[in-house]
Amino acid sequence: MAAAARINPQVVYLPRRAIQRAARRFHTPFFIYEESRIRANCARFRDTFRRYFPDFAPLYAIKANTNPELLRIIFAEGFGADASSEVEAWITRRLGAGGLYTGNYTTAAEFRFVLKTGCFRLNLDDISMLPTIRKIGVPEFLSFRVNPGISRGGMKSLFLAGPDAKFGVPLNRIVAAYRQARALGVRRFGIHAMTGSNVLDERYFEAVAAKLLEIAGAVKKALGIDFECLNIGGGFGVPYRPEQPSLDLAPVARGIRRIFDRQCARFGLRAPQLMAEPGRWIMADTGWLVSRVHVIKRGYKTFVGLDAGMNDLPRPAIYDAYHHITVLGKRPRGRLQTVNVVGRLCENNDQFATDRRLPEVAVADLLAIHNAGAHAYAMGHNYNNRLRSAEILITRSGALKQIRRAETIRDLFRTTNIPY
View 1: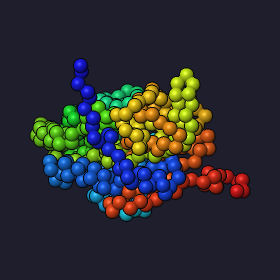
View 2: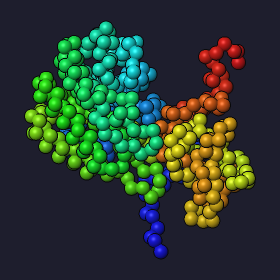
View 3: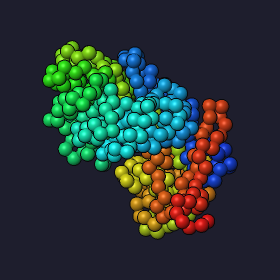
View 4: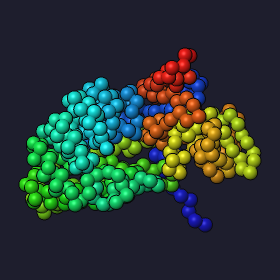
């Protein structure tokens, strides 16, 4: 008989008592996050890389989760911001932080706003952005996001480099991009690539660093430019399935250090400051979507209907992504049934899980959907005019703090002309 798959505690971990307390105090559905876990993830990421790169500069990919209370925690742990929109730049400035702004097909108005904050360095997605920069004012520092032609993704549609990716300067235009930037008056330079999403292969990040340093070497050979910083992007994966292993950061950082030493010597580069921009790795396993069962339908299959929906957590609907589900108060190894876990939207892909083996579920049972700390609330929406859910923080002292209230009908229509 084959051995049972080893269960990864990172995936199945759950602050059960705090969630049950929250469910007695707040209406479901809601998101709940654990502060101590956020801080531990920040410290582990930051300190692992600083063991090999003492001046390592971590940036948090704000798009993963933008709640201001959570951002305060992450910024307090020594992270800057990886921002990609005007609002992300605004909230970063409002909280007294700074970082790197990587626009994507950015308007002149947004560039002006970001530069006016005074707390961001610009990272351009393409050479085609340079005429806009010339019009609005040339900064002293400029970086380019390059498309090195290699990519790795953990889910469909998440390949961020190569010929079908909309991101980055293609290899054959990189030298021209830096030449034109220098001609405009830029004096300090960075280089960046974000090529993968949710990657669990430790060796992949070495390949990204090696390719970026090779490109930096070609630019230095052609133009004499030494780079101030090199940003290997994000893409640091987390396990979503209980049998998946976690990404081990120690060999990742150690391997990148080895690549830095080799490539800098090979191409005569002054070693740039290393930067990276995790989002999912910091936040995913620190949050859960908590929901109650309201309907059980026995049709061609058994459908477990929740008060949450794909408007709360769209990843399963968009990417066919797996999220582990715990039925609180039920033994995970007790009697199991095969069910589809679904929401209330008038969309058939409003399904958190299909053909999932779960303990027998009853109406009023409480379910926790794991890995909902990143790209969950942030990707949520109001389709079917469903209202967005509240967010709760479990503080380091164990107290429950509401950090965002649930939306109301008034909130949904306040930008229209209809009176409430």
